[in-house]
Every structure is written in structure tokens, then in C-alpha cells.
Image (cartoon, rainbow, N blue to C red; front, side, top):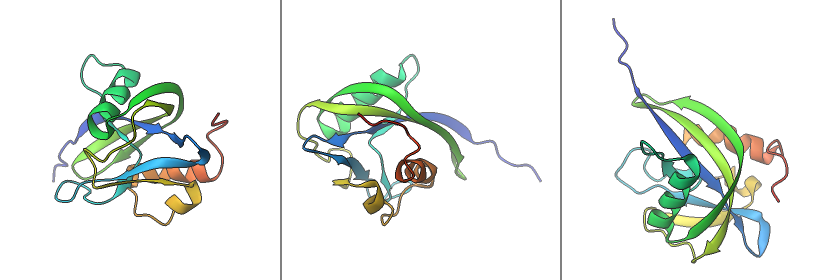
Length: 142
């Protein structure tokens, strides 16, 4: 029996604090009908060939949330294998520079504390990241 090789994608995500309440962070619910439909995740997306992580994150948030971001330092990195693909997930601290987040590429958006996020059904790749965020293992978020 042969195991089919899965493709690997690099995905960047943003930890975006709510401007007036830095204890809450933006999360988005995936669209219905696609892979991992209606699960929650941190905003971001795939890094295209020739793109830096920071450029990909800014582009994805412009396209999917209609906002401009200032991308800060890398906070977390992990890898998760789904049946159909392997995700290399990298989280960056980011802040909103302009625009009000709108769900152009998501079913819903919300600002939640890490503890509140634990009650939401998250994508499997995001769960170790969420656990580290809740436990305070990401370092300073200023």
C-alpha cells in the first residue's frame, strides 16, 4: 500500500489586536462549502512563489479583509498535516493601519480574547498556536 504524498503550502497568519482593546484579537470563520468549512482561523493565507511572508500577509488581509496592515515580528511557527495537504503555519504580530475589517473572504469576523477563542471550532493547524497564545508562550504582544 502506498501513501499518497500531500502538497505543502506555507501559510502566514496575523495576530491583530483590537485597536481599543489589546486583549482581543481578530479571527475569521472560513466560508461554507470549501475545505475546513466554517472553522475559525487567524486571518492570512498562502504565500505565493516569490513573495515574502510579510508581503503575502499584507496582500491577503487587503484582499480578504479590506484593511492595510503593518506586519511586525514573527511570533510562532508550526506544521500540520491534513489528509489533503501539509500546512507550514507562521504567525506574525500585526496592527491595523487603515480600514475596518470586512469579511470579503470569510463567513464571519470577530474580535475575541484567547480564552473565548477556545470555545470556537478552530482549524486543526491553528490549535497548537491557540494553546500557546492562551498559555502566554508567544512573548510580548506589544
